[in-house]
Length: 110
Image (cartoon, rainbow, N blue to C red; front, side, top):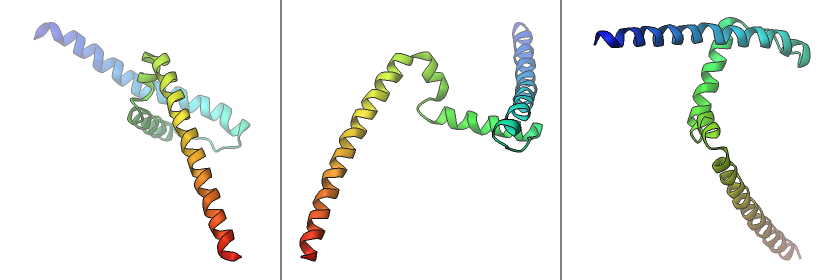
């Protein structure tokens, strides 16, 4: 077990460093760019930390998140293409249903 101590210590140090440095960098970048470009308010460190935490949770809960996108982008692109094709079919089906309902409505008013 003694051989694991340096690895665990390094992991904890890197994790703590990432937890405190990444939100700080995000906060500085936000406070430089966003108030000027989009007239958004400046944010605090804890707001930046919370924002990154929420984004991390959401991106990991949607189809495996960013990790899946970076691991196999070709597979993701084909999946997106299939999804778009299915959506197009759904939209055309909905259009035909709307047309049928409009015809029925027109017949009822006559």
